[in-house]
Every structure is written in C-alpha cells, then in structure tokens.
Length: 221
Image 1 (spheres, helix red, strand yellow):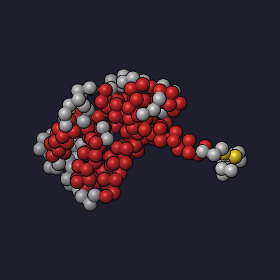
Image 2 (cartoon, helix red, strand yellow):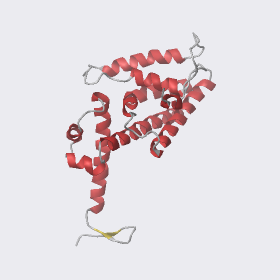
Image 3 (tube, one colour):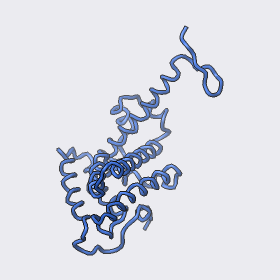
Image 4 (cartoon, one colour):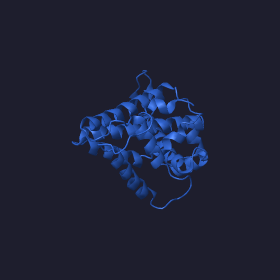
C-alpha cells in the first residue's frame, strides 16, 4: 500500500497530493516567468492563450491560478520588483567597490527586463495593494542603499535619486513591441554604460529640477 501523510489539519493526504501541489507551484512560476517575457515583448494586450502556449500549459491552468489578466499582471509586477530588488541587494553585498556594485546592478536589472515594469503599472493595477506597496518599499530601499554607498564613496554625483535611475532604466531597456530587434540587448548594455558614465562624480553639469524618488513616479499629474 502506498504511504500516506497527515496534513496540519489532521487529515490524511492522498498519495501524490504533495507532488501535485509542487507541480502546481512550478506551473504558476512558469506562467509568471513566461508572462513577464511575453508582456515585455508584446505589451499588455498579448492574449492569455498565447502566454499559456509559450508556458506549455493549457488555458484552464492559467485560470486556475489567476482569475483574470489583471491578477496575472499583478503577480508579474511583483515578480519584476522582487527580482530587481534581489539584484540590488546582491550587488551591494558582494561587490567591494560601491560604484562597481551600482554598475553591476544596472546591467543586471536590464537583463531582468526592467523596461516592462512601467507598462505593467497601468490604471488596471491597484497601486495601493499592500503587496505592491511592500514590494515597492523593498525595491526603493535596496536601490537607495546601493546608491547611498556609491555616493558616500565619492563616486556617484549627489543630485541623483532612485527615481532618476529607474526612469533611465525603464527608458533605455524598453524594447519596441513586436520589433524582433536583432541583438537588442547588445545595444541596451552599450547605452547603459554611457548612462553610467554620466552618473560618475564629479558632475560635469547641473541638472534641472530635483532628484526623483519612486514616490514621485507614482504621483498623477
């Protein structure tokens, strides 16, 4: 007889129940990862059945995990924020030179398709959802710590804020929807390097306005 297990509620689990749960989790993660790439490439209107096809799952599997497109985009947004925050934290912890850590983060954030973030944060997303607020706070804190270290070392100009960095990352890493641009990432990293050179201290010019924060980017006109 196949072995059984007892759940936290005291009920006996059927054989294979935990395996199915693990499979479901892997399916969910694969759907989110696939949606992140597809949304970055084609924008927010890509059909869900195309995402399902790319993820290698059926349409019904998507709807078992996500009630609708809005919920899927919500989780993709959380994934993007979490992965970018992890890149900032890792760079700060592992690089001995603060500005090299900032350089590493910027290029790693580009590889995470950070340019998909702004289009995902559309009016259809609840920007005040507790999970999104927590993710945004973690992202802001991790990048602020990274930039603070580079600033304290005297290598980063003092008139740059987290929001400034995120605007540049979004603009420089956003591919043209459906363009199929050959070796697009090659151009992205080349222009990011030019941008990073402009962040180095001492500053060669005075910037108009004031340093931007992530909160500034959330404000409506």
